[in-house]
Image 1 (cartoon, rainbow, N blue to C red):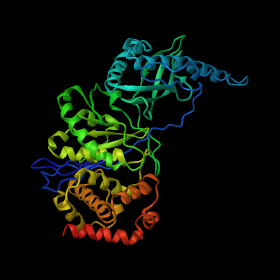
Image 2 (image 1 turned 60 degrees about the vertical axis):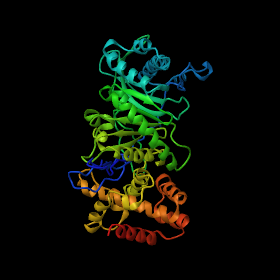
Image 3 (image 1 turned 135 degrees about the vertical axis):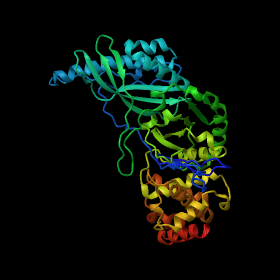
Length: 459
């Protein structure tokens, strides 16, 4: 989701990003209105993979796994294709190298980490090693995803590899990502190249994809770690880390209250992007009005990206952080991708963003007024903006979503609203199915009363 919300003074209000997580925009004149965040754009890494080389070895910081966890490779069938047998044997040899490299990363042995690769690949691997260790990688697993195929040259193979990782805490549910690798075979195969992860597409309801170009794949990073958050950026913005960490820690205390099921995230992961990174990280597809977003990276983890202009928003940056972190706390482990309930996801995050502020002080009210007096059809499910929606209308959509959720919170209380969020966003039940069960009223009646409340509030 994205962030967009009000800005104090002359600061523009950021826009929400349709990746995941956003705060409402500030209803100010066009030249002073902060951009909106883009809508929920979550991406869940595919985790159903066929592994032909036995059970993967799980490595944790501090040592290697017990030897009895490893299992011998399954014997080839007497009738198996000779090409498949050869590919399986190559995969086994590569697996040994991947295990060596994983142990080196967790043991903070850069020389051993690089030794698996040919010299031409080491520059890229050196940057990845630096970024991963800065993020305090505590769990790193690497295993072939399928069998290798010929890379077009004698003795060279392509192989997709699934990596699973944790930061800071070794016992988190790991996030998975699949990358293409290229190897030169031998008694000890040599890694020739690792590609960047590529974004996969969504399917209806849940995503079966993964984000592309994770920050630690493509950028040198500097990192600060707090009790509840991890904040990172590129060396050019190193001086902003202490202030960002302080503000992120404060936002986390608010976001923790928006957990719908289970416990809060082990650490909220926040990345501040410069102009180059904004166009590069996670695929880089952002609307003009986007100011930040939360994106699903698998394992129940959402990563927050703050846009290049976010530090210009003054106090609004705190609202933006609360908004995006609330997305990370409230959204389901598997991707949510139903545009008809965008209002609920973004409205809840806006509620976190304002942090108890009275409705009358919400800076997006003027934008909501223009929205409802315009061509809005009066349906909550149609509030979602497009990438090319004008800034003013985006602000109005976020504001209307906020007022809708505030209506339900004020009338039914936070506990029942969380139950509604779980049913609709996590369990993918439509509001008409659960309205009487949770609110004891028909959805058609509640929807009409909610829209009337939005209109009455901005008169």
